[in-house]
Image (cartoon, rainbow, N blue to C red; front, side):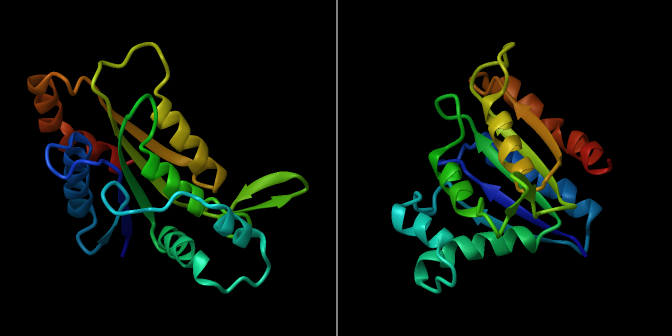
Length: 194
């Protein structure tokens, strides 16, 4: 039985195109995995604290059993406990939301999600798939999608190499984006069948 970890990062609960795309994805995923479970990690509207010196220091303190690491440990356990990861993410000011960056600051931990071997970083989250559903207001230009690039780099660093990206751009045009949302289920079914 597969487990999907869904990470939502939009500040909006209503009228969020990234959340709508995520709902479409989960529907297609559930049809292909009828016995599977979906765990949701909300980082857009639930507080994920930004990394502080105390917590960073605890990352490197051997045997630190303080409360400072509880959230980080819980987030990392969720990643290890799933088979596939879905990240829904709007582009804010040419990048990922700060809450999603705060999430990754807590899960990219040496000895937990990666380790060094002869000065080379080795990701410890092997054999997992990740899906990135990003949204942006303008139509994609020739410029690289900075949201996807950033997320792919962090996921690769912790060992996740099989990553599929879907961009829902042009969200300023409501008619255009609704047409795209209507065709997503078939698209996601094709992606999931790979």
